[in-house]
Image (tube, rainbow, N blue to C red; front, side, top):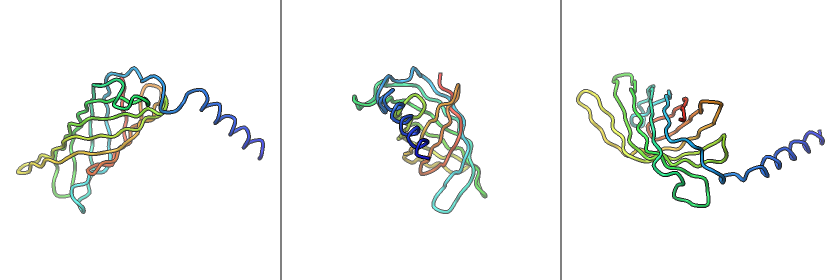
Length: 158
């Protein structure tokens, strides 16, 4: 048991020594496109399902904080939301601020403007969210939570 714990500690410290977390070079990704599915929230008691497509373009390669590895993307996200009494289209225009821990894991924050459209309904609202990317070979797993969605999906960097 002690040998396993020691080996785990040595592996962890060697991985940390290899590259300092939140530093290093930014990924050479200029665009992302993705699809996500999850829960949609419309008010405090109205819960439904949603599918959301997203597309983003990099606008700042090294973000606002010079000491860490961060990038800023302009992102468009939208899709249908299915509630028991209503189906609406929801879309957002926002900035996505990526914070790269290493080449495999990224945290992000989003902020911008959203809209919800249906027959006889037009709502505008601020869009704020938090999420993470976990890089696999050619696809990233994306998880996101905001005041109007709880999403999991795939994102394709290129």
